[in-house]
Image 1 (cartoon, rainbow, N blue to C red):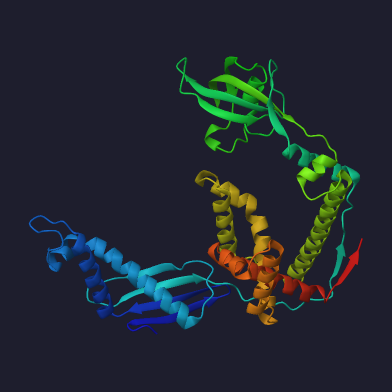
Image 2: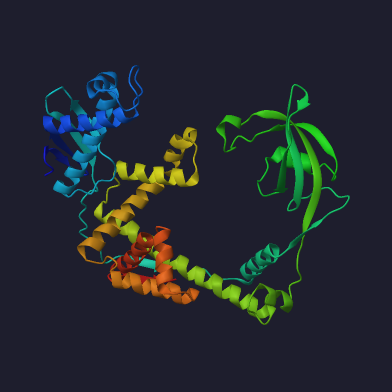
Length: 416
């Protein structure tokens, strides 16, 4: 126990606990003195040079700021003590309740903590799973080859023709206010790919290069920015240039340009092999999904709201969801987040109880494999992963592979 901080468990329930914290008055006084001295260094008070004001004066003048700093420091230290003393696995920062902070008396408060729940998995075996590998058709290979062809195409200017879907348009767009267009902004838009709202695309396709128009356009009801949904604005639009893709000929020369392929037939075969490999990966993923669903159902695995909320918040941040859409996003994403939480709890519990976590040796072996494929030094790859913060992710991947191998060995997988 940290000196001067006493932590006592006051309540415990599945997935949560509360702790009564008492911080000795002398430790609080020391924190107050530190906070006052820090403020004194920066304080500018009438009649005193900066940093020369007496502590007593600083304490009176900045009483609330000192108190706030003391509370932050004391709560942080108390939380650290609680984590070490109780060996907790929290899923979020604690909530502070029932705070009592009086001059010359111990500071007391309650910490309420959401914890990773302890789950019991009574059944992990005897499930029946179906592995279904989707066939790769000639049409799928042709579509993938066409995608490669489109990616390799050059954009060439079109003279005297209006733009059509799939073509690249350079334009200037300005909002018209009180009958006068504002400053125009340049855009490059590929039509038909959702890069511009439908009404703007419709106006673009009416114009030849060099022509302009003024029109009312309406934002769709599902426009990402809620404040603009259904709104109508008048715009001034000028088309400067239209370009279309000049698709390369599908022949052996094209195959050689794409990669190390002797012929177009070899490129097609490589595409088919990639698609077949992806189909096998998706089939394996489908088996794992079935297994998780059956384990969760057989063991009634919970999905604590705190964990789901934390996951929703992480995805909202990753997707750049604006604040005004957070509630809607949370509602749409909650079912998926809860499924992910249940999956993670099962995998973590199995990994811990059966000692299946990735070892250092296995991590080193995987990094050596990655380095071999990239023809790089293993130490360099390790450094890159460490710098990017991805070592933990790789370790988790290895752990999950071991857990699924263990679980699948105890169930029946049939091919269809």
